[in-house]
Image 1 (cartoon, rainbow, N blue to C red):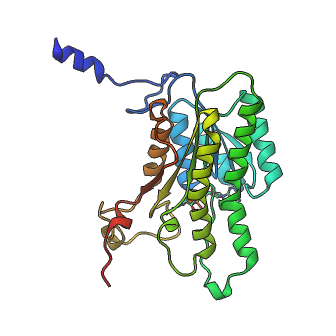
Image 2: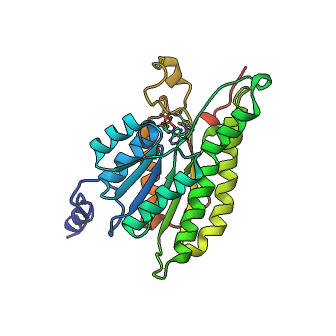
Image 3: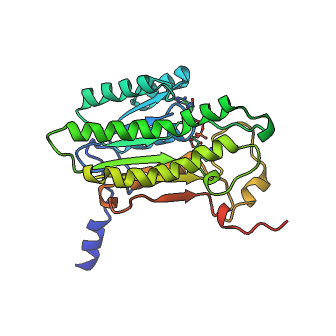
Length: 271
Ligand code: NAD
């Protein structure tokens, strides 16, 4: 009798649309998901993961070529939007919300990285990095807050997941704009957690370490060995964490920064 009960418990589950989704899926009704920077890299893995979990997915990107390819590959909807363009971003979100009736999950992933020695770095570079990496999180969160406030039918579920970086907690020379933008994301996440609780929206951030997206160069074996986990990360490592945070059961994880770096930032470095 006990063996039968446990076999039933661990039977593979299917998403409401019939797709196999491993151990995780986002419960019915299918969630409506918006991802920024979904054309390539980590964002593309996130788009794929949520499509496979039976969600309705829309994503934006400045890269039209890869955006269209990702849309064809996944069935997600592509919006050609630069997240630094506040009006375009708000109009895109409004369009998606009008089409779907609401947005359940927003994943702020779009980002830009550059290395410039501090003494050469311009104010324009600094401002531009914040306009791409940080400000859109304020815009998308404010949009969702306003949307929920204006609605009569309460939605008792919401997720905002912001992709920060381990450079928010440890950094290096020449990455001042990037590090500031990512540090800003963790602090903004805290404030948004408090502000959006009245709409049942949890807000968390994920800080990836070294995630190999196939660019810009091939990895060397020693790059893997620098990590306690003995490998660098891959985009699916981050996408799975986004799915996990989005599970209805995980609404108690709120205001958190989840570092996913194979233990890199926990390792003592000897010079
Ligand atoms: P990526 O360059 O492969 O992908 C970023 C995507 O965002 C691209 O498709 C790009 O076209 C898009 N994008 C860039 N600027 C945009 C804009 N203004 N408007 C709309 N879309 C824009 O990078 P990735 O490595 O997949 O990084 C994704 C996120 O993860 C970024 O926020 C990055 O800072 C963060 N991150 C990455 C790593 C890593 O090792 N790869 C580590 C820590 C944090």
